Amino acid sequence: GSGAAGLSCALAARGARVALVTKTRFGEGGNSPWAQGGMAAAVGDGDSPADHARDTVEAGAGLCRDEAVSLLTSSAPAHVRRLLALGTRFDRTTGGLLALGREAAHGPPRILHANGDGTGRELVRALAAAVRAAAHVTVHDETEVERLCLAGGRVLGAWTRSRGGIRTLMLAPAVVLATGGCGQLYHHTTNPPEATGDGVALAARAGALLADLEFVQFHPTALAVGADPLPLVTEALRGAGATLVDEQGRRFVLAAHPDGELAPRDAVARAAWRHAEGGHRVLLDARAAVGEAFPDRFPAVFDACRQHGLDPRRQPIPVTPAAHYHMGGVATDLRGRTSIPGLWACGEVASTGVHGANRLASNSLLEALVFGAEVAGDIRRIAPAGPVPAALAPPVPPAEWAIDEGVSAAVLDADLAEIRRTMWDQVGLERTAVGLEGAVGRLADLEPASCSRRARDLALLGRLVATAAFTRQ
Ligand code: SIN
Image (cartoon, rainbow, N blue to C red; front, top):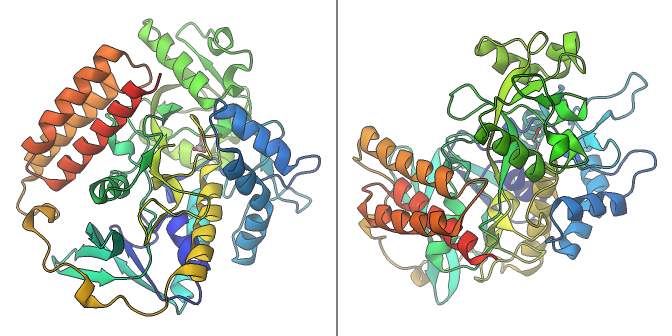
């Protein structure tokens, strides 16, 4: 993967030889470049990693793993310095200090941002430039991993397929999944088309332990314009004072949570969902709080609004919850080790327990930076030097592993649409036992019936998420 986690890991693995495999064009794919709000770090006056940790655990509904939270929040200032040393251009105050924004469920303002709401793009620009210049990294872009190569209970490498259709077995003493999220499991998502949960499916098929799969985060404010994916309307707008209102201009989130629009993301998303289910429109009103400054402060959101004929300076804009981030994933320890020797995971694909049941806003770029570097450190310490003997690897991969060849786009789209609808309707913001059981059954039928690997993987992942949700009491 070539999002923030993969880039952070590859860079920090200096001293090893790294092959970075990514299915998109290098530096352009995944959720990282789309991240708007920013990156949380306790670098402001009066703030501390302990306060950041407390907010993280509270947003995570008490289900976070404390050691992971402590590692994340105490490492944050060092990773800010690392990014600055790489030339990351964070926004600054007129006095030249790092400008810190406010987001929901954070005590003080502690969100670093770049180009207003273009933080992810700037981070990826700086990291990708450093990776391009790093002699120890070779990039294989527009190349997909078909399967992990396992022998003797160890991961020995991965079968890959390039855009030109060439299949290659890459052998390596250490394989890192940094494949990002799975927002495409859902009918409404803020995630790009490539966020299809490939890493979790690869790990599941290899028999790795998975954790907390039922914890899917729904962002309260995607722009409700019928696009796929839906454009994100950053949380930083609510941090700046924008309010959620209905068709009468009435605020409704305060009735659900005393912190109103600045409550943890799950509470705000559920309030918006229930209000819409009650027959109301849900709108974000930034006219008073941001007004004429909108294009300068939030250029990406402003552009998205204008593309859909909306002007957030003059009107409340329609918003809806949408799948945004997966807290669950491939179970790892704090060094990113999975349950299978030879396999590590970092970033959104991993489940370290750092986010509990609900990730605190702007902790995901930070997680990618921190855990990417932790994985690299562990690999440098323990992975054997030198190549894996080819004789250990199994021979030619079976045909059913192949990434979709000869499947018509219409068939693929129809399969994916049904999976995504099932997940949205039955495994979404509010779930019932009956609905979850129905979803598990439907997805179990869809998986073998689908003629594309993409749809089979997504159906598998959906079934696992629904099963985990059913099991969680
Ligand atoms: C946002 O800008 O609202 C998204 C930030 C995040 O997902 O942490």
